[in-house]
Image 1: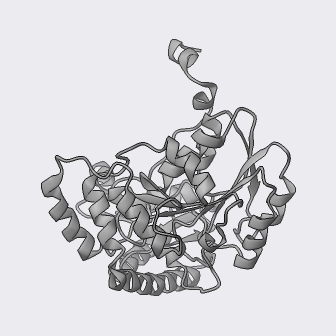
Image 2: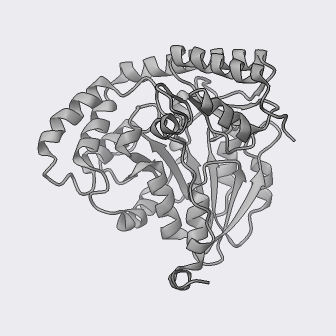
Image 3: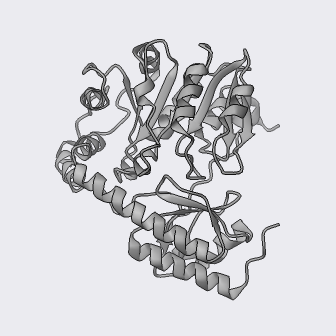
Length: 371
């Protein structure tokens, strides 16, 4: 153990570093490319709401002034929008969805607490639990790549502090049955906090995939997380928002930093909430692209799981990591660090280009079969 390790909390020593998606710039430089198609980070390829962009430009003139320290205007607007009162006391604002996940670990996880989830899934809360001395109980998803709620329920003990369900799930794109999820939430004992991550739920064109915000009631330890990064196309502004009952809120708000979101970001998301046309258009075009990509990959012999998001999770039957490397050489960035390939749905021109690159790489035959 070196000197710095000796000064570091054990929970920090035991977590792996986050592996972000590669940037277009890094791939261009590595392979000497002029054009790179980045479909790895589930960004909204249709851009941002024009209203949000205009609001950012206007707010930039006041960038020298601190923003609303507690984001009260945004909290009140979101509270009313989702059926709460106008106090803002059911809403926490954070630096992206990952910001609230980190805060949950800091506020609630104590040494030895257990946390139950399924994998693969978004790993920010797993890391937060480990950092704070908790124990991660991770179960596999089902063969259909869906969170196994029955298996999770069977693992609840007196030591369980928190459970996490990403719905729809990242990276699998699948969603659990809403009625079953609702029953699961209400079956949790009072010492367990249920965390539902709905970062992608706006892309779910299936009306059977329902938000659990409606289940938030006093006395029910339920936290529902959302973000402006995906459907709203504001990933660069880093704004997440979370709903909970007022009892939980009173605790969480104590630990939330002031000025957590900048002035231009607040202006952007306030305006984006009013741009219904952009949201509806994005949903429709993503659904169209998702159908096209699923059909094309299936025709190539890939297995594609039904997606409720702006990406697909697909088994090429090839070595996933090497496939991603070969695609990069052709200027296509996808996620290759999961068991199967995760590919963001882009604009239709991007989707067609992506399929053409995949066909070229497969035809070259340089990617070995999966073991």
